[in-house]
Amino acid sequence: MITDRSVPIVTHIKGAAMQVTLRIMRFDPEKDKKPVMKSYKAEVEPTDRVLDALNYVKWYEDGTLAYRRSCAHGICGSDAVIINGVNRLACKTLIQDVGKTITIEPLAGFKVLKDLIVDFEPFFEQYRSVLPYLINNDPKPIKERLQSPEDREKFDDTTKCILCASCTTSCPIYWANPDYVGPSAIVNAHRFIFDSRDQAAAERLDILNTRSGVWRCRTIFNCTEACPREIEVTRAIEDVKRAILYGES
Image 1 (cartoon, rainbow, N blue to C red):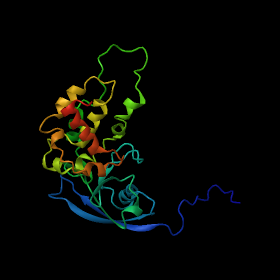
Image 2 (cartoon, one colour):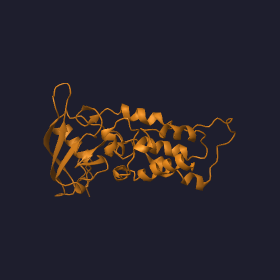
Image 3 (cartoon, rainbow, N blue to C red):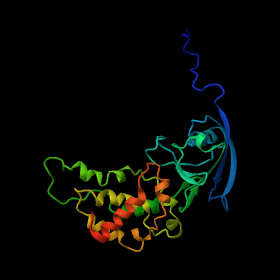
Image 4 (cartoon, one colour):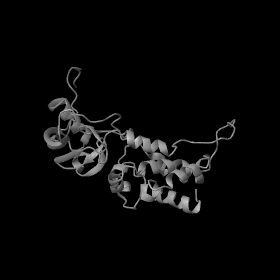
């Protein structure tokens, strides 16, 4: 029995480590005229995440690499990037699912601030435009406002949004028309439009019943496929369209 606490604990199975090549889009607007793809090697395990590989590159190969990360557990949504052509969260994407050569690019449709970091302000401006919070002008109740399971079920799916922008930046309509409010904003409007405790559904529907609102959606389903929380984004957009046309909120 080993009692010496100075002996390191073995955390990797011998032979499980592998080398992968990361092709990362690099761009520093203060120095570069255009983006360039650079390759790096990283020692990882098949069950590591792409975020682990990015950390390896930054910590051991090139400390100038810039990317966002926070919780590393698929909750904050900060590390959304394009991995092998698909919008994904780096912290949820396993190395074994993307192969030994991994191409990583910043989200499309946004201004690149540096490398994999993009300017999210236009995205959050569109999010704020749909009033993404509960509005109820009744007198403050003594107890909480109750809601039936059936009423809750109407918007339960859209409560899962983590504002990672994966759905919005997967949308070809958004690429061509940045004025389009985008799937994520519509999802967050949906969450309150169909909340029986809220009193501003009509106002949100008016906001979305515009040229840059829900009618820009062409039902391509890219947004649904890109969502890391598996929200049925396209269905939510169609729900909002029906509410505008038929008053089904």
